[in-house]
Length: 447
Image 1 (cartoon, rainbow, N blue to C red):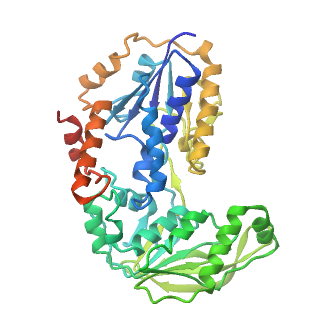
Image 2: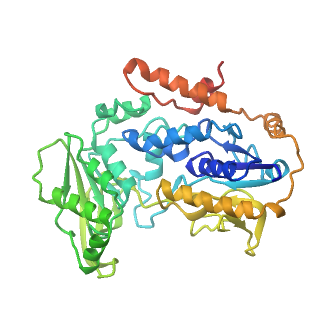
Image 3: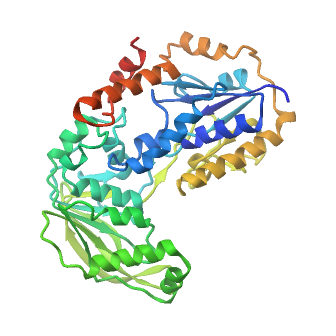
């Protein structure tokens, strides 16, 4: 097999899995993982709540992949700023875009632009210590609405309800801990449009809501509806059955009088954010299941007083320069990972994987199988891939430095990693995450 130089844009799980698979499948493959942040691991590092160390165990597996001598980490480099498409074509046989999804899908209801409305992606980035978001977050609201029926909605509700001191055993960034200490929230209202068998919570995430002694989970009986389709879903899916069983336990339990409460409202569809100059409430329409897993509005409305609204209705990928993009689906147009132009013709040497390929759905296991499909397409195209003009693998580094890029390589990431661990040691913590970007670069580039 001929040597193969590949650039993977994005060093989250999707990009790292793609690098791992192609180096295993092709003995001559060399991969550059090009990441816009100074640290790898993407949403596993910057999209997971700090009190989820179990999920962060995935990082250990990803870290092992980066030890492969045929995979090179090139951090703090942004596609479209430090590198353009022509630059990638000149230096690589193939390019795989794995940039994920980091913005919020819009919710088009009246009042959604009032002060006090927040997107889930922005709040998650803040509490996960993303280096590019503001250091502070306004947490003055005592009553909060969270819109959505997935795990991100549960994470937000838990982070808003749980006392900050319970996070001190985690890698939480200091500015986030200090911000959460000022949190005024006592009642978090989670609104789901359909019933208990249709929500997208995973059983473990739902159970974790009640792990804090300072939090009561209250499932409201209105809307707790199980029709024939719901019963079929419960019977056919262990996960659905566990979720419904957990909701039933909360429904039947007496509140303990804990100082913080998470309220779960089923069959409530948000239709308007209320308020004059800022958020003062949320109007929802009661819905009714239709027997096929869908729900329709009943014309009956309920107003809930809240001072903040968090929209957890889905993530959305961003359009990348010089590449075709389906703005409705939020993906780069592709066929089994091959990027397609506006006429549906594959662009030579251009591929996608992860959420930018299929949309922001699925768990880590889906990401790995998704990467395998993309790599299979790439390897079947080997004979047609154009050879790069540059034969020197290090020419890309010279090009980046000439353009003023401050590169964080594997050694720099190792220094940053060690610095975070050293920060945590005096406090009995595994690590304390460093933010903002300037501090990360300082730690990564200091010998």
